Image (cartoon, rainbow, N blue to C red; front, side, top):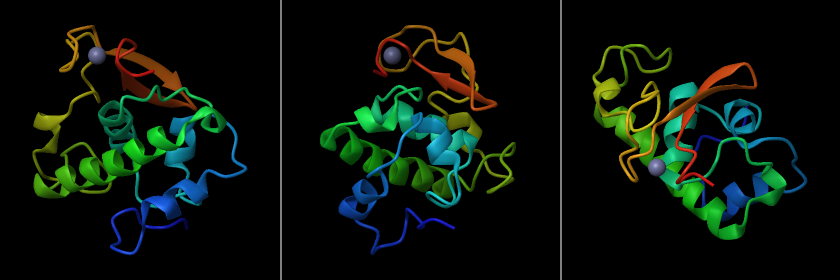
Length: 137
Ligand SMILES: [Zn+2]
C-alpha cells in the first residue's frame, strides 16, 4: 500500500517524491493503491477538478506548482468527504451526503462551477471520469 494522504506526517515533498520516475496518465496513478492509498474514483475526479489539472495528463509533465496544488486538492477532497460523512454511492465512506457536494463527479453535462462549460465524461483506465476540459489543463 502507498502512503495515506491525510496523515499529518505526509508532506508535500513526500507527495512530489512519489512522482519521480513515474510515467502514465494522472488519474489511473491516483487510483493505484500501491502508489497512494485511499483515493477512490470519486475522490480522484474531485481532486483533479479542485487542482485544475486534466486527469489525462502524463504525470511526467506535471510541474512542481501543479503537484503542490494536487497535494492540497487531494487533502481537501478527502476532508470534504469525511465532513459530509461520505457519499452514498461510494465504496469507501458510505451513507453520507457528500454526493450533494460533488464538483465534477457525476455532473456530466452540467455547468462547471468555475467557468460554466459542460462537465465532460470519458472513460480513462477503465473508469468513468468527469472533468472540465476548459479549466482543467
Ligand atoms: Zn471549468
